[in-house]
Image 1 (cartoon, rainbow over the protein chains, first blue to last red):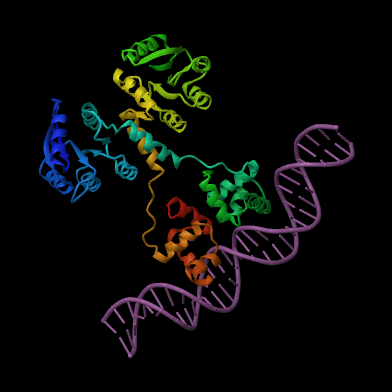
Image 2 (cartoon, rainbow over the protein chains, first blue to last red):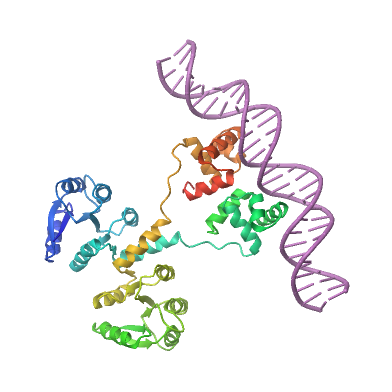
Length: 210
Length: 210
DNA sequence: CAAAAAAAATGACTAAAGTAATATATGCGA
DNA sequence: TCGCATATATTACTTTAGTCATTTTTTTTG
């Protein structure tokens, strides 16, 4: 039997959710809370497999509660429940490793499916949520294009600078003289309209050369 | 009626999928292809709403096909279908903006749900896939902790260095003398066991001070 | 208030970075 | 093979960065 803790401040909604969840005979709601603080308190008295937490609650909100539960009862899986697909909340929740982020307007089945999936290590994201959050996450991944007028050699040097090497080390690694490295560096500075190697290192990192 | 293009090289599997999809009376498979090239060719003759593409196909694989379809027929939604939850494929697919990444072992319903969701702008990720890919995406987000022995002033200087300022500029911005900035910089280098400001800039960026 | 601690400044120095003009190779097409 | 372009080197020079010992100023605190 899967033991679920349900935290939601609106009693009607909570009862609805409870009934909904318990239509599945493998799941039982063995604890109910009005707010995050109560939820945490319950965790200290009883054992649960999954916590279903509303994001917005008085006293202690769902994110805070999730944080506490995560650290004190690491075996528990956490599903966040919300009315809004607020971007910042989603990120915060995902960062702390919740097992799902559900909109309340979803159907019965999907909540039940998520509870079971959570226990198997899955992460349930409703399609609308995923559509919003994945591009956001990918944004940091995409690299800006580096100046195409840079020669391969110049790129190599730029990469070295981005690794924090000094001219002597770069010369050794690339089999050049220190003077050449300096000259090339000047070239690169010219092309990229930057001033010194520190700015080059920043450029290299921001353009994911390193 | 939703028009679906189904590309999958194994005929048996394809027929199975087709039957599966067409249990829903709103959806119709109006095109079938053995490989990516055929799929693209079909798109040029017929109109489809959604393309369901197997990742691994002869001639032109699903990723390639998706890329072409994405650019030539941007109104079409694309769902990737795969046996394996291969990380690299997932990333590639997500980057090009597919509407779903499904494992073949999923149930009938979920594929149908995904097709409909795709048309509404949703992104379907199965729980196992999401559980794998989201932490991967978050990894780049999480900041490493900066050395706690740094004083606020030192942090400020480190941040400036990370922005590519030289000592004079830092002195002006923080209302210090150039000499002080140099001294402080030496301090920071000592604490972080680094050699020069270029390495400091790299440190600052990697630790998200800038 | 006065001693101690912390923060900021100075000056003198060395090392490294960056600039610029010029020289020397090295490869490649006419 | 000549000549031209490109890559690499050399040299000499200026500027900036970084070190260190020491001093001044400010802040803290007994």
